[in-house]
Amino acid sequence: MANTIKLSAWRLLPIILISTAAAFWFNDVQEGGPYVLRNLIPLVILVLLSGLVLHQGGGHWTGSGKRLPLGVVGYSIPALGLAIYLHYAYSINLNDLFTDAAHPDRIFQYLPIYTSVAGGIGFAIGWIVGRNV
Image (cartoon, rainbow, N blue to C red; front, side, top):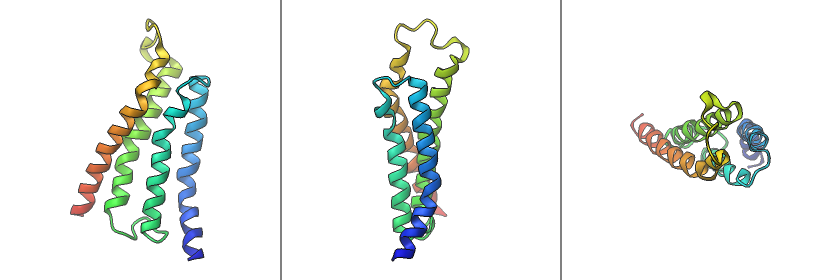
């Protein structure tokens, strides 16, 4: 049992490090604004889903089949990808997207909802693909 916990922790470490780096970068881009904690919700969901997969698989990604791992990949691509892309666009004012906006930082108010819903759809697609593999 202790070996499984060590293996799970070791395999979960990259997910935690990426999520932590993204969280610090989100805080930097938003300059500590009021929506920073709200934007960490999709990252926490990603870490929890990854931990669930490793727990179900006994410390291995595919130990419980392909459904959950592909679901987590399906969640992470739109959830993490969209959040990172929109933070990047905000940080460099991509194509003057935020120049004329009255409150450009309000994009972060609803971003966790968009990314979580998109991640949920990606999870469902990954789950379906994993069922057919």
